[in-house]
Image 1: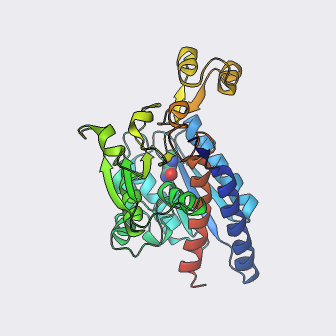
Image 2: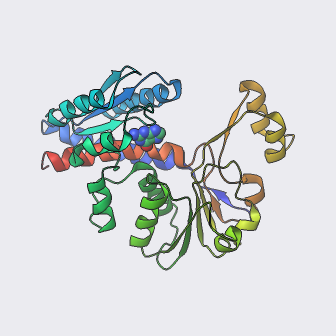
Length: 306
Ligand code: GUN
């Protein structure tokens, strides 16, 4: 068997188109959905992500507001900004870009976002609603993965799913979503014994552990669906050759830029065993921003009772 790739870029484009159409319909009723993104400090990667979010808003007709706070800001400074956005009638969604500087208390900040405007789905109230199966705003990466699985007609009912990674923003919410879709779910993590034996039982494996190409063919049952959430920067040519071979386009990319992005799955090793595989880049990544746009639309609809 050779796996086919799940085209996250195409599925994300479809989600964005449907959000764009729905935004137009809202605007025709005089409702302009708005997203505020708060960036603390000047980390170039975070600034680039925030720029991408603003451009996507513009494309879809969503009002976007960016609030830049100095890197020296305190927790109280960030809380003041969030409280002002909570009160702002023109803002439906608030996203505080992570990671925050060490002096800012991430938990306090995330809990200060009004749950109805929490388009990241990180507030404990939204996580509680997810646990209860009454979710409205769900974290963008896990809901993007569910959308990819649905768009690829992957059968979830009765399927065995293994989630590698127990993070608050991906592993835990994704396990709940898969369970609500009637999959039988196992969460694995760094202390799991005989990891490969557990994942080899799975019809669906989701790798979200942040370890470059750790998931090899020995982790995967013949015909399984594999979703790669990892995004690891590889800056050593030897490693690129080891992972992709001497005549891979990925090596050309590396030679042009000096680095490439590689997932948690060893693509070349897993492709002959799996039935479907989400690539890195072009898999889960594009879904996340599309789901943020959808969450902003959902927040606007719920808040303004459309
Ligand atoms: N930084 C990287 N990904 C994310 C995300 O999904 N939400 C927020 N708030 N920050 C991020």
